[in-house]
Image 1 (spheres, rainbow, N blue to C red):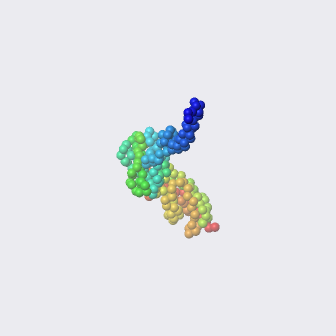
Image 2 (cartoon, rainbow, N blue to C red):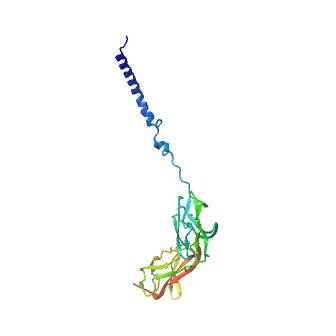
Image 3 (tube, helix red, strand yellow):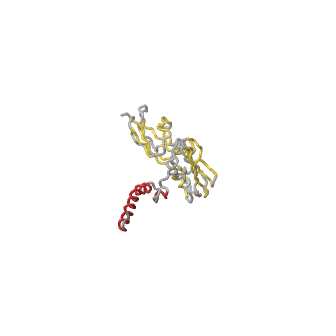
Amino acid sequence: MALSYNQNKEFRLIFINSIVIRILPYWFLISGCGLFNPSSEKESGTNDIPIPDPLYIRVNYPNGGEVFDPGSIVTILWESNLDTCEWGMEISLYIENDEDELVHVNTANTGLFQWYINTDLGSGDHYKIWIESLCANGEYCGGCYGDLSDSIFILTDNIIEPYVGVIHPNGGGIYTIGSQVEILWDSNLGNCTWGMNILLTKGTDPVLTINHGPPDSGTFNWQIPDTLDVGDDYKVFIESLCSGGGSYCAGCHGDESDDSFSLVNN
């Protein structure tokens, strides 16, 4: 049976609509999978598995151009994405590109270290700092990652003499045996691996090691032991156990209370 023009047109529209309805779900499926018209996120690669940064150490300070006086304390700064381990870091002083002396070893990977500049170092404009890690992935490696100051820094000939000064007890005090006393001191030496040595003297004789190896923090709380005798001729002696922050010296700088203090019974 022949169709009129209008009937034929209506039939074609129905046929096209039915095709579109069948194809439309597949269109959305293809678009949703990113197979058609991929998003800018896909093109940029942000869905890719991230690649970890390579392991590194970077010296930040001193990194060239600085001027320091021997006997002063300098905060060495670095950054690193290495894990902290039991061996830590090693810090060395270089003249140009050759190692001159050890600054500190087994330093915690905290990103900073207080360096006392040894007064024995000669003046000059040729110094650098080298920092290296002593471990990788939890294993000792003896310097597998490291960095050197980008340029040289200067040490002057203006030497600041090293000192330790007892602040308290410094004479005239009366303390009860069994009580606690805060020992205070001042120093320009900075901290080191071996720390300080604090002694109690009676007259001219040492009678007690109060603490061996505490950090050079300037303070220590001392519990006066009950075994000590009553007396009015006690003093505190405090000495550093290292020179230049990295070398053991067994008491190269020290100071004693200016005058005696007394210990009494409760």
